[in-house]
Amino acid sequence: MAVVGPKGGVGKTTISANLAISISRLGKKVVVVDLDLGASNLNSYLGIRNSKYTLDDFILNKVNSLQDIVLETGFENMGFICGGNIPGIANLHYSKKMKLIRNLSLLECDYVLLDLGAGASFNVVDFAIIAKESLLVTTPEVPSIINTYVFLKTLVFRRLEFAFKQFKNQQLLDLLAQAKDIEKNPHLKKMENIIKAVELIDGKASELILKLLARLKPALVLNRIRSDRDLKSGTAIQNLTKEYIGIECSKVLSVQEDASVGYAMARMKPAMLENPGSIFAKDITKIAKFLIQQQVYF
Ligand SMILES: Nc1ncnc2c1ncn2[C@@H]1O[C@H](COP(=O)(O)OP(=O)(O)OP(=O)(O)O)[C@@H](O)[C@H]1O
Ligand SMILES: [Mg+2]
Image: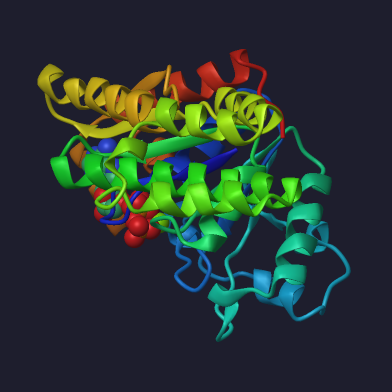
């Protein structure tokens, strides 16, 4: 499962850390991985000060497999892979990235939770695409909503580009390039029009797009909710993504603003455990139960 979302401290790492704890407490084996390459900080959210191994050891081939660098967290059923900080880690070579992706799928657990960096860089998008499920974290403010939409659009276009390259049809790739420039090509603003244009070029390719889009169904997590009105942002995102990029964010989950999260962070303790009875802990548990009921496995 990938935890993704826009920049601006919307709560991706807070949710990754606490959700992992919650899933493990519900009896599932989970490994949470800090993949915010070059800006890792998940360890502090888990209250872990010294990490014997980090992702650097894997990137520099000091260990054979990713499993070798899974750290104990002190929580039953839960392992942690600490982020790396070697210079250049944010620009992982393609073959290294593929090796990392292969190793992620081999980790011995029920769930792998990836805390990804902010925004829609190639790294983030590539890791988000391999995940079976994405949790799209955002706050209800307008800039976050716009960034969330842009993130999803980038993800979808990169996925389509990858698929079209396999068709080896330059016309399809040109069409995609045109669709990226909607100022010049306003007729390609909506996904349904892109699909119609693809169909005219290659009927099989348009079928493939529909299948790919149907598979990308991120669950939306609205974080730092203060009132019921804030929940309307979820509907705004759902409408935008459906109309313009053909993606259904069918499930909207929410986590309320809770001062205890900041207090726990200041003490370098996981919020879930510092205040197990808090609104935040309850909301996170609800999300963990939803994911387990969905039987989403990596
Ligand atoms: N539900 C919440 N209630 C109160 N504070 C919260 C909540 N969720 C997150 N925060 C606070 O928001 C801040 C940013 O959270 P976090 O670091 O998880 O964001 P992020 O999306 O991972 O940021 P980045 O893009 O920098 O990785 C933290 O100080 C955290 O304590
Ligand atoms: Mg973060």
